[in-house]
Length: 355
Image (tube, rainbow, N blue to C red; front, side, top):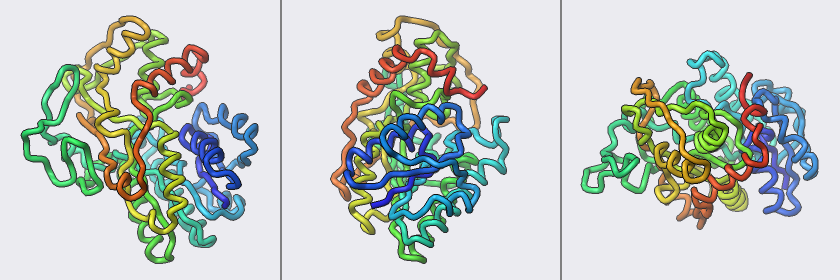
C-alpha cells in the first residue's frame, strides 16, 4: 500500500508518517512539504533516517502533486492551522484560502485521477463561535465545566461536541476554509466513489510540536513557562478558565490506520479528540507547570478576542463505535513528554517560531 502525506514535515504529518510506518509494515510512506513553517526542517532528517521519501512540494501547485507519483491513500495534513490566519498580519486572507481550500481541491483531483482514498485532517474550529459561546457552563475550580442540569443544544452534551453541532458562521476564516474543504471532499467522494474520511481533530499535542500557541497551546504553554517567557490569560475576564482537550499523535495514527484498513466504510465525518477525560483549562495547565517548574506570574488581559471560545471538548463516541478506537494517552502523560523534551531541547521555541 502506498500512502502519501501532504505536509509531511509538519508536526502532525511527520509524526503520522513515522508512526504509521511502524504500524503498517510493508506500506510505502512518502510525502511532500513546502517547508514554509519554522521547525519543518527539523523533521526531514528523522524521516530520511526512517527511509521515508520526502519531496519539496506545495499543495497549492497542482504540478507539484502530479510529481509525487501514485498513491492508494492520501493524508492531507498540509493546512495552515492558525485560527487567526488571514487577520493576524502574518498571512493574508487570500493566502489562507489558497492554502487550506485550493490546496485540498488539488489533492482531491490527485485522488480522483488515481482512485485514491483521502484522510482529511480537519478541526474542531469548524464549529460555530456563537453556538460555542452559548454553551451552558459553570465555573468548577479553575475551569469552565458543563452544567449537568442544563438543557444542551443539538450536537452537544457534557461529554463534548458531536458531529451534529452547529457549523454556522462565524467560525473564523480558518474554520471556514476547513468547512468548505470538508464539503468538497464529501462531494468528490460521492461523485467519484472515493473513500473520504474527515477527522475533525481537537488539539493535537506532543513533544516535537512547533513553538506557536496557535499550533498547539499545550506544548507552547509548557515550553514558554519553563523558559520564563511572558504568558497572558486572554479574555474570559483574565481567568484562564477556557478549556480544550488534547490528543496525542499516536492515538491519531491508531485511528487513521483503522480507517485506512476499513476502506470505504471509513467515509464520513468523525470527531476525534481526547475527550472530557483528557481536557484542561489554561489555569489548570498553569497549576501543572507550577508543580513541574515552579511558580511564576501570568498576566490577565480582559480584552475579548473575536474568535475565542470557552469550552471545546470533542465527543468521539461515533468514531469509537465505528472503529473500536479510544484515545489511550492521558493528558498528564502528554504534558510530561513535552516537558521532558523541553529539558533536552531548551532552544526548541527558538527553532520553531516565526522570526
